[in-house]
Length: 77
Image (cartoon, rainbow, N blue to C red; front, side, top):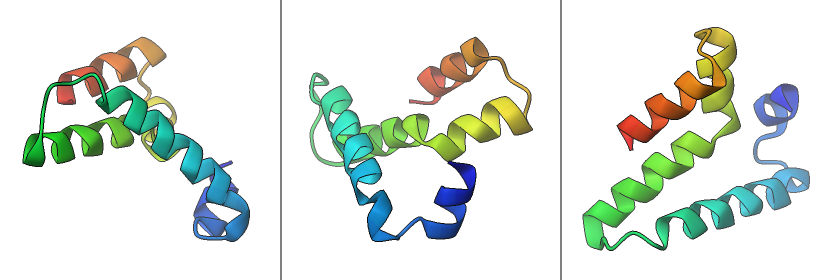
């Protein structure tokens, strides 16, 4: 997946992948009672937390455990 995302991020073959994560982000934002700028920021934070690149950076490059990565993203959001 690393090579696919790095080399073909905008290729039509990965459109369903991006659509899936966009829907997942929307589903996680929906319950929050925020609007306007706060909603935009919340959605951006959740999208970042769900990003394959973010997860890979935190766990592989920075050496965090899965639990540490989750805790960090929850604190940031």
